[in-house]
Length: 428
Image (cartoon, rainbow, N blue to C red; front, side, top):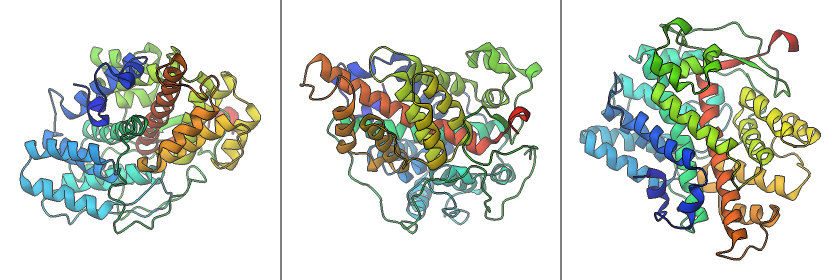
């Protein structure tokens, strides 16, 4: 079973299934990530009921009804009625839109039927869904105080961030297939929350009484003052696995052996099966050049999403790759400096930007008009007739755009909530 195809109502062997198969490792490993995070053989301290409860809560917050109903059904099969009721109560309380810097923290400590661990997981999930750039080490301290260990925190963050990817892909494919979801739950206590771009990385923020605890680290960093066009370092807020303690499974999950020197990848290696599947998904989405969108435009989408979400680290990496692949240095610098509303210099880049922004802010904002604009502006795509090679290329371009934009809603949430960027000495 392929969950994304199921939720997007894509027929096996149909037109969109064939186009998805141009990125076979991305398709297979998105499913493998679901298995690693929702149906692992060994759950550790992170139970199936907790995993399904968090998934149902997150899918409900993202307002993609097909996904929300699916995860509520999974939860109903694995947990008591009071847990299902707790998820519904928490979702009703948490409904808003994002990302929005300083949108305000919504907490769930008094949700009927949710214990301290699950309530803290809801707190953390709401932060990751709507304003991950406001995360600080205290958010992880809050989880530790509620009984989450370092391995559980990494798995929890991966689960929430993966769902940020999965639900966006599902919604995007539904729109492409003519089955766009209704708006879903747009009401809620926080409907008026700002839906604005994060203007600066590393801005100050206040958490709701959370504080650093347990094994949480507050590293010494030289934080970037904004979005930069040079490389950055990154330091974790909970301990990465030490090089000498890496197991063969964890080393294998890195895919690239040199990543053993990266604290980020050694931290994610605490959930090795999810790390391996995530990395394989990433590589196929961005480096498989069998048709579809050109590399520069894929990196543009990654940069736009990172700029909007406030992830200075990811923006620094992918702006450079965009330029390396032929993107205009001046335009990319303007995107970094001025934000996602800046003039990108072409109808095609503007259409990519508009689609990536809509899918990132709230999935249901992404509609057929965004697909039509990309098709009208993309080289070799305009006025493609159904069933032709050009039409297949048009679908491949749109799916690449959906995949790239969705993937950085996954990547940003890990970078922003498990650690922080650091300016290398040579750039200070």
